[in-house]
Image 1 (cartoon, rainbow, N blue to C red):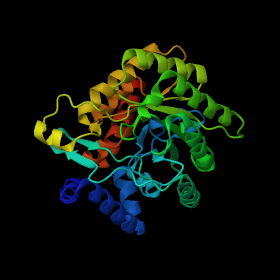
Image 2: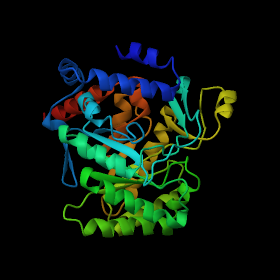
Image 3: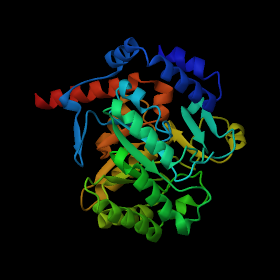
Image 4: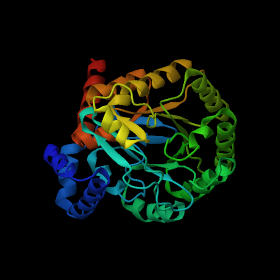
Length: 350
């Protein structure tokens, strides 16, 4: 069924397909029988898949990564596809249109995407109000992925993160600090030791004075070297944030099947999907082995089948997220992963 739906959507440009599918989903989800159908065929309910992290109870370890539900208007729908958590955003203080179109490209032969969206979103205030309204009818865990506006200079970036933190705080269950997107000029410079330590420390100070503290994660690039990863591990252990989301999209273009002429014509952007699976997994494994004090790892990057998911979990991820794999493989992938996890747990009991 999904293969037909995907064939239809792939007749359109990626961004138009996303908009079209969002409109269709918002229309059909209004019918109770559609919700019942989705729950029956895509959702699993078993205590064997539950994960408890930072006082949050995840019904299973599979979430939807940031970038799909940028403006927090789709999560009430996606809870019926079997996800246990949805990460909205990236959210910036002020609304922004993002980069010029076209800015999202499919590499079908590689089961990959290249995007240079540029944090297009409605802004923190509007998104916070939308969360306030829609979350009443949803029990899914919501993560708030936060970033800085394109016009904000790096020396003033901290204030952007603090604004988003305060605006979204009452309505999200955890935060992800995005300093790793390749599509906002100079953003990745904030992954350097001193600016990163400053941003995370100040966010933690704000968090500590809250009555109901929220877990804070850091999303990192897959292109970091071991020295940079060591610095980040040290900062996480020092600032005591909850952990890492590994990884964002990559600026590399290695081992692609798609013709070089097509890749060159696309230009800049972050690569996601199957080609970055191993990069992401190896970073997860490195972090898991190097951490002195255990912290949470959310694994994302190139999960297109059950084996990819298990690879991330075996490497050290506590939770995993889908994005490109969800687009190419459909919601049945979520159930397949959960059923395999149940099977593994049952075998361990024998």
